[in-house]
Amino acid sequence: MPEFRPWRKATAALVLVTSFSAAWSAEAPAGRTALDSALFYQLLVGEMELRNGDPGTAYQVFMDAARRTRDPQLFRRAMDVALQARAGAEALATTRAWREALPTDLDPLRLELQILTALNRLAEAGPPLSALIVATPAAERGGLIAALPRFLERATDKRATAVLLDTALAPYLKGEATRTASVVASGRAWLAANDPDRALGLARDAAAADPSAPGPVLLAMELRAVRPDAEQLVVAYFSRPGAEPALRLAWARVLTAAQRYPESIEQLEAATRQQPDQAAPWLMLGALHLELRHFAEADAALLRYVALAQAQTAPSAPSAPSAQPAVPADMKPAGAAPGPAPASTAAPAAAASSPGSEPKDDDETDADDDTTRPDQGLVQAWLMLAQSAEQRGDFAGAETWLARIEDPQRALEVQTRRAMLMARQGQVDNAVASLRRVPERNADDARAKLVAEAQLLRDVKRMQAAYDVYEQAVRRFPEDIDLLYEQAMVAEKINRIDDMERLLRQVIAMKPDHGHAHNALGYSLADRGQRLPEARDLIRRALELKPGDPFITDSLGWVEFRLGNLDEAERQLRRAWTSRPDTEIGAHLGEVLWALGRQDDARRVWRQALARDSANEVLRETLARLQVGL
Figure 1 (cartoon, rainbow, N blue to C red):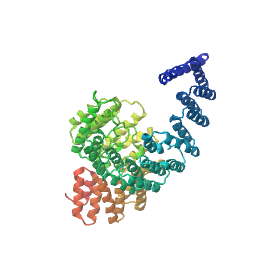
Figure 2 (cartoon, helix red, strand yellow):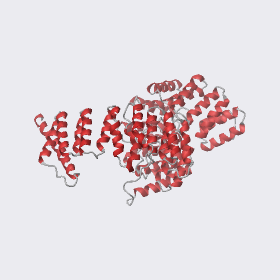
Figure 3 (cartoon, rainbow, N blue to C red):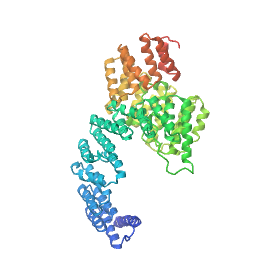
Figure 4 (spheres, rainbow, N blue to C red):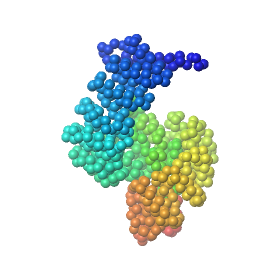
């Protein structure tokens, strides 16, 4: 009833002030009197004015109370009111009054910097930035300096931000405890300002001054995407004794993202030798070995992770476990929702460099993979152990691992894995029915179910049925680029080439930087020997968007082969094979070597590829067409 609404607002305001007063009294320093009635009612008036839509009056009330009491909570409340009202000038005035009242408090300096950055008033940020660095205890100053680029990242003028940091950090370039942090912070700021050459120069300076420091190495890892020669700093660091295991994990993630799996495994194995009781590297190591179909190694690493993670989650273990890195998105077990399965778990036809084989773009991957908690890491490990058992034909063993997962939030993943087990045993219709019976909590679940069903059908080579499911999914989620891309990949498998090209061009129109769509279209043209110059242009554009991707490099080698450039084809395919010894890449490299007259070399590569996946269709077709027996 309308006449009671003011009372409701007053009651809500009273609840807020009562809660605030309890916290205010609880956090009051020794010797300060508790909240008196006058201040209590003043705060109540401020909350009521805010509830009644008058933030200006509320702000004045809180500021008056803050100045009288010199209480940081009240200054913060006044600033919050100003920010809610989008009154940037008043918010700044609050932080400055707060600094004046409490000169030793660092919070107002931090908040002033954040507000100035958000308002793009960097010309005013120099004094508070310098004051913050000076006021920070010497033991903490290096950490603060290292964090400044991220602290200021909201500023839109990145070059002005870099200049601001250079000016503020100039006094700290001579101090032994702050020099490296200062140089690296400047490097990060200049990288954000799109000046990678300057950033790399700073990274080199910092590494030369302190070869054991982690900051320059981390900056070099960030730079590698735009300045590949930055990798030399990383390699030099790891060639020294005593490399930090945490940095090895960071570098392993970078290598994994670049699909340089053997090198990533090398770093993870070194990390496990340095710290065998740290769980995180074992999970990543198991995922990578599984992706490469090294089942024995994968099982050993995952079982080691399970033992360590279970010890962490045992009742006697500390309640705040150390952070675990997320398993890379393209390393997740097949059937993980949402999104298509990784190459090693998809249908053989979709497991290499032909259309449909590539992992999703980095910004399209599932962001909800929470393996930072040991219990969720355990779920991932059990899913991967089940996947390993399934791929080895041990269906009972796979079910044993799945039975350990009791998390209702992962029910769809578990049921998807069970459906895959049923399908591999010939019970395809029952498997599909079991997926369709899984309850849907939201639209994401509905999408994940459709993707899982389509993937299952691809696994058992029911490509037309898979296409129909993707078509249904695209009708329901017409703006979903991943679904359009996967539908295009299946269209190619059922020889609906016009549909495939239409869908891929639609993906490119919606997301012009979708490297894998460019590659898929270019590879499809090259594989059919059509419009080869256009195919090469598409693949080269894909490689610009996804530098170093071995599947795209394979496509470039294949189109060069189709164009008759055998030496260039071998160079590109050799690079792809070294980075990712995938069966289909091996099939292509072997064919180029065969055409070059190096039959022994070709057979050697084909045997290695065959050992990885003897059922691969591209390899089998290649050997049959060339009438080669191994």
